[in-house]
Length: 401
Figure 1 (cartoon, one colour):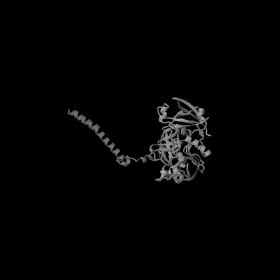
Figure 2 (cartoon, helix red, strand yellow; figure 1 turned 60 degrees about the vertical axis):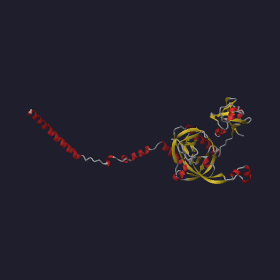
Figure 3 (spheres, rainbow, N blue to C red; figure 1 turned 180 degrees about the vertical axis):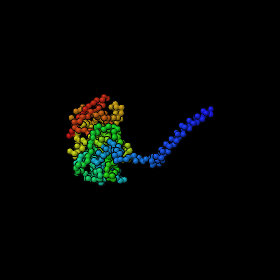
């Protein structure tokens, strides 16, 4: 047993000692060539900028921030202008005795008690041709006696009114210039609900501070919005957007992601609170703007000498019940012009017009707002309630005498 043990001891000594010696020498050599490990925050937690080592990498990062919206803004911005105007407005004088002077009897002696006052205003616009034609709203510059246009970069130019149309709220201006930057006008009939919408302009006069337009981004919220009559202006088929539009944005362009102007910013929905953005704005479709501008450039005004050849009255609940209608809707024909469009179409006094071209009619303003965009020869498809039956008539508009 002792021999057996001695034999194993000898073997362990012969094999183990060289192994221990070799392992020790290897570790010593490795330690002498490897620098000592240190735990420095500077070595292990590098600042992100140290990852960018070349100019090419910096350019790549910068380019990655560009997208369709930034390219559209860069394309359109040089053609957007700020507009400052001086207009003369007639203001009616109010005093504690105004209730007496409003009476026609007293007005014969004291007049209308009004005075004219110069007021300053501001808005936006966009250049549509290299020779200096500019589009804006009528409510921005239509009554102006002095118009100053500020281009991107701060250059200011005097503008004159070529023509204006209060009904559609579109005004055409002209500055003396050449080779000016100008926008690309798109096709508002192809606008898609939900696509990007970019509003550019001069809200609160900020253009004067920064010499360039302010940009807001949203989407197309809806199309074909029929807002009816607002301050003797008729707004139909408006484009709705949630891109922020505020006071001073009026007349500026609404642009798609391709950098094409699809509308002119005109109205904001404020719920009667203020003139600041609280949710939605509305733009006149660019196809309508193009049509009106062409007429303004040629004639200086828009002529709407059309007639339907009939007069109407509103429907109240008593008339509706008498005629067998469940609710007061439509308008009732009260008079017809002999040998006019209505008589030729077969319309009769007492007919109730419920729809025109598929749109429900609730008041005479609905028809008026529709007709401002029409011309002689256009056809109205009437849905008429007569003798407790629904009939359809086609009325061709004619030129008014």
